[in-house]
Every structure is written in C-alpha cells, then in structure tokens.
Image 1 (tube, one colour):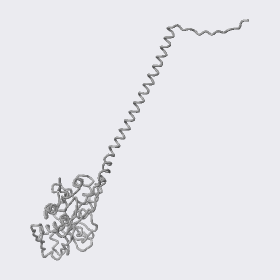
Image 2: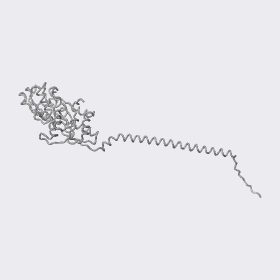
Image 3: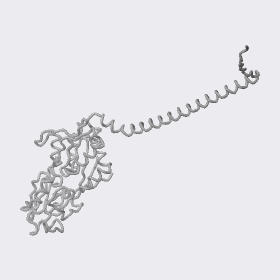
Image 4: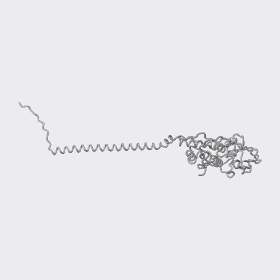
Length: 330
C-alpha cells in the first residue's frame, strides 16, 4: 500500500531575477542608511545651534556681570576727604552715588570745616595737628592757593568745581527787608554776623563786600592774613567770630542775630533761615570752590576719579544743583 506523499516544491527563480531582487534590497538598505544619517546630521546641527545660542547667552550674561565682578574683586580703597563746611549735605549724597558705582571704594571720616582750618590741618600749622586726606575741596581759591604753597596738594590735579552766591539770611519769620548793604548801618538793623575772615571764606567774601559798601576797611599781610576795622555805623552790630559758615546760619535761625552772611547754598541745608538779599557779585571776589588731590595721597588715581565723577556724572551734578551750587565752567 502506498502512502500519499505531499511534496512541496520551492519555485526556482532564474538567476537574473535573484540578482535583481538582491539589488533592490541593497538599494532599499542604502536608502534607509542615508535617511538615518541625514536625520542624525540635522539633529547634530540643531544641538550645536542650541548650544551656541546658550553659550552666547551665557557669554552675554557673563559680560554684563564682569564689571560688577571686577569691582567686587578689586582691592578695597578708603578715601579721606577734607571739604568746605558748606558741602556738608551735598557731598555725602554724591559719595553714596560713587560707592554704588564703585563698591570697592568707601569714604571714611570726611571732615567738613572752614577751609582755613582744613588748610592748617593738612599742613599741621596754626596749632592744628597734621591730618591726612586724599582730597581737599575748598570754598575759596585763596585757601587752595595756601594749601598749594604749603605743599599739601598736587597742583596738577587742581580744578574749579563750583560757584556760589553770597546772601544775607534772616530768620524765616522775619519781616526785615534790605535794599542794599548800606541798610546795615541804619537803625533798621541791630545785629548781623559774618564768619571770621581769616578762617571762613564766606566771612572773607562778606568783609570784601562790606569794604565795597564803605562799612569797613581792611589790609592784607604778605602771609594772607587780613586785618580790618569796622565803620562806626556797624561796629556795635557785627559779630565776626563764627568759625564756620554753618555757625552764622545757626546764629540767625536761633535769633541771636537778625542777619547773617551765608552762601545761597546754605539756605538749602539749614532750616529756619531765608535769603532776603543777594550781594552783587562785583562787591567781592568770585566765589569758586576748587578741588585737588593731596600730595601724599596713597590712592591718588581713585581720588582723581572721584573728583572727575563729581564734575561729569549727571546724577552727581543734579545733587550739587539741588543744594544751590552752580557747576563751574569747564
């Protein structure tokens, strides 16, 4: 008995058909590889682009922070300033602006006194103990001239910083009026004060004005010391002992005297006083505030930069003008 045998016969492709099929498979494989490679290449470009963008952002942030980082890493500098008493309110605000821009710089023991007193302190003369400062800002050219003569400043750094006006101040509740300085010799005025002319620049300007008005006479020695005498019409009225212009303002506000010669800027920094008369500029020498780096400053470059900042920074200029100072012409 024969078993049924099922035979499966695989078709045999002709040789050329097998070769074509193999070629098709190879082409398809190559196409797949090419597609994968292209995709990988595009992805790599995208990643590189993103990385470059991120790096650029990081570099930009780094650049923005570099100035602050450099300032933070800079060696700390402490500046000492001697300045005219009339700058007592304006200058600290400007110093604060400067330290915000230059956090490595600080200001220590800024002294606001009469310019003549500061000149003596820098030189250790007139009974004053010699003291160190990096910057000196005076309220008169004569004070700076004396500091220069003493060798206390670097003359090459000297510059004129501000101008001011001389005014007669009265208490805010006063009804007194003055038309000109001759009125000081009338019965309408019973007392007035000026700063001591040899120590306080405002007092020297006041004396010059009173001489111009015929209410005083004066002479100056070779060393700059001023001698003076009062006209009989004011001799019993004048108090010329104030050791700084701020003292004059306080005499007026407290009622110790009716009137006082102060700067126009002092009206902005003292309560209780008002200006009732501006002394004509041709009655006294020009009121100029010069500044300079001292000759023995250990931080001369930073000190010079601060002086330049005072004169060129818009915010600093606004502060000085707020307190009544006029910026000196360049």
